[in-house]
Length: 340
Image 1: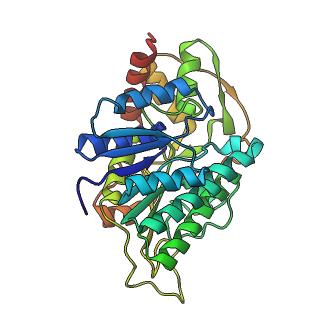
Image 2: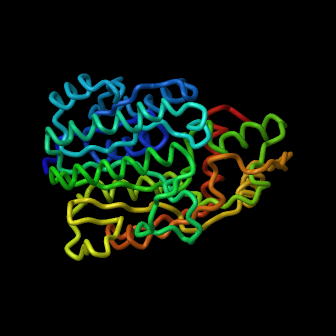
């Protein structure tokens, strides 16, 4: 694999995409970053993330929507990437209930276009973002990649499950090494404004009441961004291979006779939402005013990651504590927004 071949990073102005692109650039790897800069949340934050990447001479930004089939094909013809890190998607569980068409266009049509380009250019590895939301109404904890994921409870989750099926088809038909990563509630500096930590911090600093869904008893496997990036890049460096022990009579959904893998990336430390808020209260030195509300449609009660497969594959498992991760986020937030 040529070290000078650029990695194509889709969603490079997004939370995880910016961090992964930055780490690649710091390693001396050229990056072509693609993003459509949509207005799902403040575009100024996306531009500020891009500003972290643009000083690197190995970085090139292309504004493009994955739904633009011809535009994407032309970009692949020009760049000819050997590795593709696909982090672009329409995110948000609750938003998908009100705006399903956005998810169809970005997460299904966009991913189909990307797979076709990867097929035409026989990329050496495609790594793409799936989500812990695919586990849906599963109740067995922790979630393992070998578990069935046939009961999503949001359209967002359904699109991510569909991505895994589409990816397997291309791995099987065209021998494209493809790895899907199920992220578990990612948080940290430069995070998304629609995520709980960002919303809680903004409201608490303004003296406003925070909305606490599930009466504070929802459980999430909060995973710090630096751990996500480390896992993503280690996986990117190790292309998926066929599982020599795959048994079609007892198929494991996480592997295949094709070069296809699925891995969880989570902290393996499920945390009750009220404890997460307590860590934020400690970092801010502010006691939150809470409005307790029922769980919203599409929200899972609990998530917890079994990461043994990831650890066996790339010798890594996330380990940043919630207390430490929240403190780092607060430090970034105060620095970026000038909050006291």
